[in-house]
Image 1: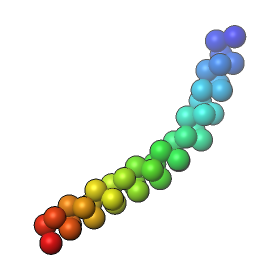
Image 2: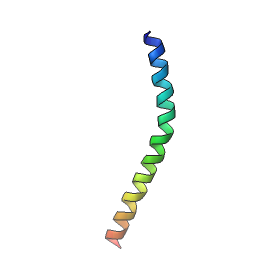
Image 3: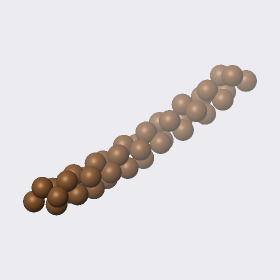
Length: 40
């Protein structure tokens, strides 16, 4: 029982890993543009 749920969590983490990476990049770029606008 424990191994099965752990396997599902592992698969979800693999799938959400890419999604969160993309969202993280978008977030960083948005922050960078705001900072660039404030500095510029």
